[in-house]
Structures are given as structure tokens and as C-alpha cells.
Length: 223
Image (cartoon, rainbow, N blue to C red; front, side):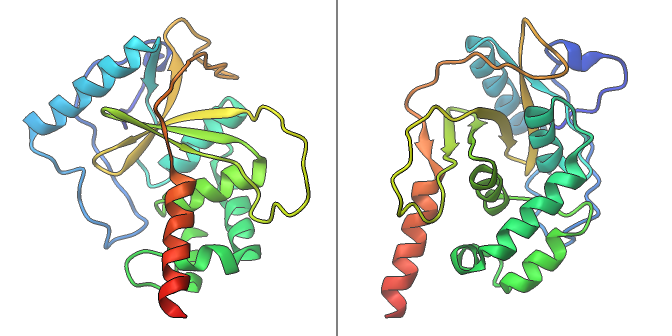
């Protein structure tokens, strides 16, 4: 989870250790990653065990504020180098669909402010950016947390026309309690390139349903 890797350690399941983070982006973000050592260790071990049962492990991703975009890049392109491209295209997609996403901005900030900050390298991404990427590329994103898995579905915002049912590609990332994202890999590999995750996971929860419910509640209250 957010571990730093200097020598091919991303090619095998990592050892438990507490990462160091430097996030130059959102200065006012809460420091949830500053957990007591026992809580961090317990969460780490629980997630490691959960992943191992699925034949998976956490690939270390730099904690530089770009971790969400690096994780998506590793899953989508097979490496973390395309994080700037992904950030740019997500921001452009959110801007084009502001009527849908403007209600999901956190911390009492305006949508325009959120977007202006999100365009900057090192700014944390979150649920809105994940939903935007899933919809833009028509993929599902499974988000692993200790004891649970959320699924962001790559449904189009406006689905007025009948579309052919097809199996969407699924990306796999981890969200840690200290507000950090990592990529997921098969224990048996490949450890670089296309992840080719093989995992059958049921009892997952759709984050898109939560967001749509939030939008519905907002619109109902404002009428």
C-alpha cells in the first residue's frame, strides 16, 4: 500500500512496512495516513490476506499525490508513466459533463475550484475522478479495501439509446485508509505490462449507485 520500490520489489508481493508520503497537492487534505502503527499494521495485514486469497498482491505506487492516476495508468497501460495524460483527460471529461459531476464536489468547494486544482500535478484524485475515468473509457474499476470491494461501473451518463450488452474491461486498484491508491497484480504475474488480473469477486458494492443516489437526494431537496 503506497510502498516505495527501488529494486524490482514490485515483481513480487511486498513486505509489510509503513510508507512515507509527500503530497504537494491538496495542502488541506486530512492526514488520515498518519495512523497509529498498530492500526496501520492491522489494516495492512488484513488487506494483504484478503488479496492473497484472490491470488493477488499490492503493487507499490509512489505516494507523490499522483497515486490514483499512476494506479490507473498501471492498470490501463501496463505502466505508471501515463499518469499526466490520464489526469488531463479525466479533467477534460469532468468539465464536459459538469452538469452531472458538479454536485459531487467535497469540502464545500466549487466545481471550478476543484477542477482547477485537479489539473495540477500532485493533486489528489478521488471518487469523482475514478467515476469519470470509468465512464470515459467504458471500464469497470474494482476498488479493494480491507473487508470490502467497491465497483465503479463504466456506464454512460446518458443511456437513452439501446446499446449492445458487452463485457467491460475491469481495472483493479487499492484504496488505503491513509488516502493512498495502489495497483493490483497477480501473484503469479505478469508483474509488468498488461496486469491481466484473474479474479472472481462477488458481493461487491457499486459506487456509481452511491453517487447517483446522492445526486437524486440533492435534486429532490432543492426542488
